[in-house]
Amino acid sequence: MRSIKARVRQTQNKYPLLGNYICLSRAIKGQKFTQSSITREFTKLVPKNDYAKSERRTLIKYLVKVSNGS
Image (cartoon, rainbow, N blue to C red):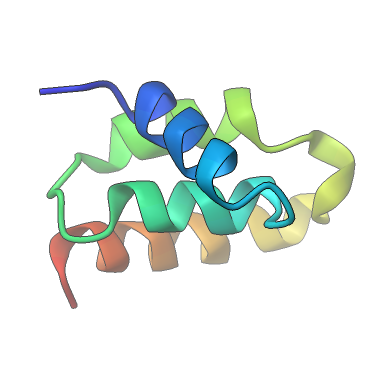
């Protein structure tokens, strides 16, 4: 299985105008990644100043749903 980071980079190369969060969501869609790995990659790949600290939990919850195919 390829890493989330590799999938995000591939998505960024294919769609260079999309933001980091959108590329992350496209990269994990339906792949059933764990919440801990999604959280770790969110922290690494999405700049801290893109979203408020209070929004982080909600954004990660949404990414987990996307990953699980919901």
